[in-house]
Length: 318
Image (cartoon, rainbow, N blue to C red; front, side, top):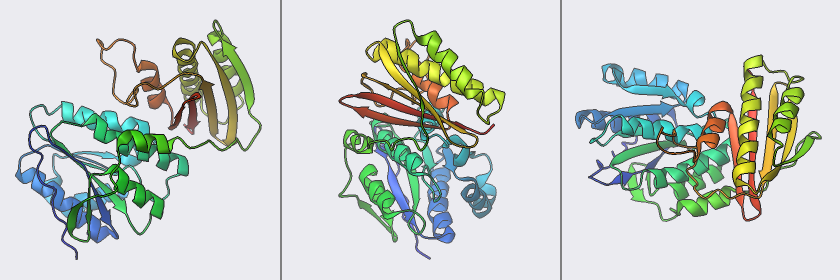
């Protein structure tokens, strides 16, 4: 069994963000377990955000040490990767004056290409969001189950890498802005002909009515239909307020029980972290619409290009 080193404890104003590469469950529980036990020994708060089967394995491995640790199934929290950062920052906010230790596993075998791309964007933005903040976020990656490109991107989004018992600086670590730009790949065209609507000033009611009428034919329960319409309305409202006063909406269903809306306008995403942190009552309106969209949708895909901003909103099931 490979003994995995424990990342050094965060000093004041020191953020540590290593990727932990593992090949099997034994290596996983050994590496993550050592990280958790070191945090508990230092009396630092611990948050585990990993897929359910890994969470179960860690609880069994940790035994009574798992009692009282904050845990969440990443398959639920991170279904839309755009939701994850708010949860990590929220945990840190609830522990002021301390250096939280977090295990976040946003990418696992079986993720779709779109989910992986947005999770990679999230991993890059962690470095921006936590810069100068005393915390450690350990991110496990399955070398045996993930595509080589995912592992390569992990080396770009993490300043250090733990592999084969060694904790080393990643020579491929890249600025978050560069990684996010690389994530702005062209969208594939819809597999089915979409419904198209162009809208401008005063057209928000038309957008909402069109979305409501269209989604009635989808195989979603009423609550999810309502979430979809609200998310589309918020995205269109952002177009009118910040995207040049007009936009284009496309609606389609790529599979039974799945609906997608694409909103395209000439706006800019001036803050890559917009919508990824819960808005406060005193923060004004910045990011509120995008925050709601992230909470309502199962996946939010973002393309921020010189030509403008495009969002693809995915909603499925019940």
